[in-house]
Image 1 (spheres, rainbow, N blue to C red):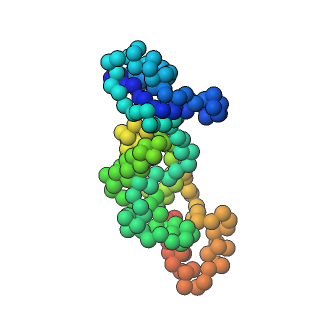
Image 2 (image 1 turned 135 degrees about the horizontal axis):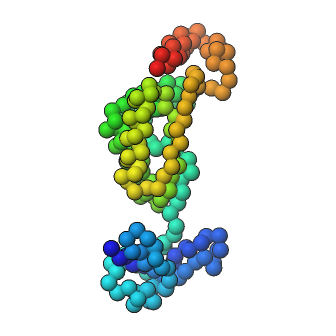
Image 3 (image 1 turned 90 degrees about the vertical axis):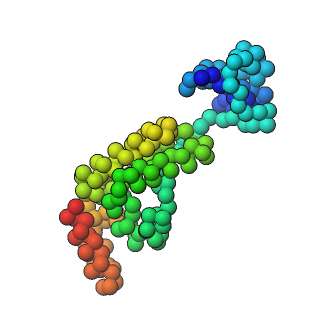
Length: 196
């Protein structure tokens, strides 16, 4: 499929400031490849059969890069997790509670769609899960499939936590520093995590 995208302004290279700005321009795309960028008047004559998009009131610019996201397409609240301070919220973080693979896929797909809608074309997703290995593998595969299916260019960073990782420091000292009513609750969560 041939496309000709018209824009009043095309930012070809933001580093060049005014020299990287093309006025009354067009982008000719064949398949998924940008073939040529130039003046709309010239490219519209050169590619008369291309499907036209945009107008002389649009701005076209390179896709944004999201260099750090956690891929939450659905809010934690919609997943049944009440937001709170990070430290008290961590035991219930989505990566610590096993979910259906379909929900994980849908969550990742919604996240990718939101990024694409906002102009992001490349993303780096960071993930930290403390699930049993089979569940971790299944959820990771669902996340990779969703991002691939969305068309978003992405890389995926797997975070691995092998200790009670709520703080940077000694876990025992942290637990001992808590008020008595929290200490037993945190100790039980830590015990459950150590059995995963």
